[in-house]
Length: 282
Image (cartoon, rainbow, N blue to C red):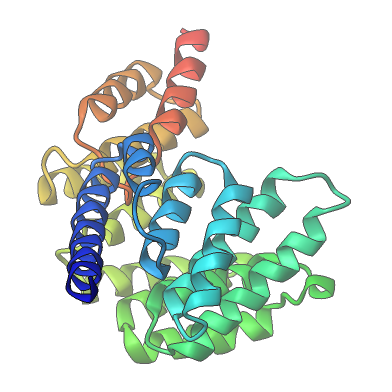
């Protein structure tokens, strides 16, 4: 009997690992509902709860996502990744909730971002989100440019290009526009093969009304990463934002929606929303 029990335990563990792997593959293909279906039959663990949370997060069900990340963190309280995702979930809840509950959710987001960074100072994504929070949140919710500046320095120690990007955002907030552009160009010089750095500059030039230079930067991004969904979306979003070249924006959004997307790409529903705007304007 003991041998049978041990065999069943091993079988359950193997099945759980296999189902988690297949669910992760579905997640990476943005099939979040199928991933969730598979995970519901998986043995509970921190990794399972985390992936359930990520699925719910990508589906826009932020309360369910937070509940799942809380379960994951309860099982592994020293896991920086789980704390970071929990912070992200509360951040989205703050953005989508009423003015009465938003401040509470925002404060929790900050607390979990800070916890994630404390647990693992090398967690760059958590550091970046904490920087964004400090940069955007008012002082009564724990934000502030001075706090953001300190985090920007820590980011630069780990990733020089990302540090310059953070400094660019700070400079823009302070209306130091020339400094912001200079920092974006330095970030691009330090990471010349990262298409995101070129897109950052292209979007900023458009924001400053320098559309011809922005077009040249977008062309450079397309040459650097032909057929990249990120380039399609960024360029289309910029056109829609500035009410320019809407026919081209429509074409780019269609290309984006036909692409094989990953969780790192903007959500399909965001592209569909932009496409409706373009169609309504044409």
